[in-house]
Image (cartoon, rainbow, N blue to C red; front, top):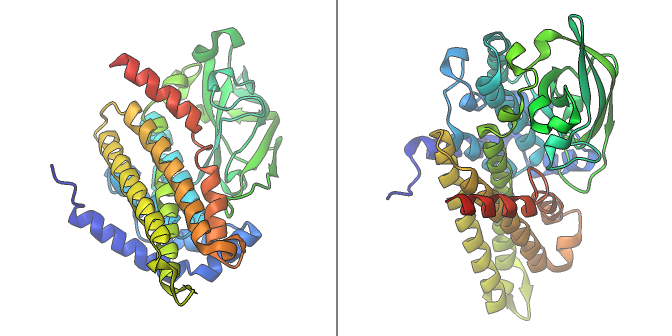
Amino acid sequence: MDFTESDDIRALRDTLRRFVEKEMPRDRVAQWDKTNTFPRDVFDKLAGLGVLGLTVPEAYGGLGRDIVGAMVVIEELARRSLAVAIPYINAACYAGMNIDECGTEAQKAQILPRVVEGKMIFAYGWTEPDVGSDLASIRTRAERRGDRIVVNGAKRFCSGAAHSDYIYTLVRTGPEGERHRNLTLLLIPPSTPGVTIELINGMGLKGFPTTDVTFSDVELPLDAIVGGEAGWNHAWPMVVGSGLDVEKLEVAAMAIGIGQAALDDAWAYAGERQQFGKAIGNYQSIQHKLADMKTQLHGARLMLYHAAHLANEHRPCSGETSMAKLFATEAGKAIALECQTIFGAYGYVKDFDVERYVRDALGLPIIGGSSAIQRNNIYKWMARQ
């Protein structure tokens, strides 16, 4: 059993690290965080590397399915800034992967080449003010009126909706009592009349703002149905398919990226900061913290890439992806907080990146299915074994 990264993955990491150092310097990243600004110019340059094609088949201009490679991209970008890592997810995974697996041939031909070019970003319109993980209880409704679809309702925590080309929206298209059997996915352009987007001012995850979205008599053509006519009232398999497994891994990869950044900064600071005549890294209490941080990070990375390998092979992996998401996001949060502890009072100051690491890491056990939901998933998976 060989856990060594392939030459291709090592080359990908090296390419991304050079890109990050050149295009995402720390001072620019701090400004994106401060102003909650999406650096579109940097995203466009990222597309020039071709990495948005890691979830798109070669027939549509991509590199072919490589979930492991996509997770490497997310990890390396998140190591410096979520303002670029999250848009990458929204394009490569939300748009590329979902349309490849669920779209009609016409939708694939229209959307997938634009994903590769960096000209197609999705936002998820799933969560609602009163609905989180229980997606079968959504209330946003769509009904057919002749050759048009009319949508009314509200979505919450739609990250990047203001910058997206489509809101990938889950709607109810039949009686509420049927729950899973009358859900439909729609492609809704944010510029459509009746769509209202309001920014949510969250603690972290800045640079690709999350939003509230309201739909008021929004009219769409029938070709907005993901999967075409066959997708009407049949979205549930699309929601709980492999895309949901990979979404858990995307968040885990972000947590590992933040955790690695926090460990790197803590290690450097421990070697520089002098107290009582020597660097604080010489004290055993600090050494033990750094050792624990490294151990947590190593375990999280092994779990992530094992699950990513399974997902890439289209093998069942719901339990492995839930374990990876749970462990990596909780580890990322713990590592960021330990980094802040090592920095002391400086870790509480916005002039230091560790303050941002903490704010961002606190959100990751929540998004993409909370840690409690992952534990539920893991228990149910165990019971099925």
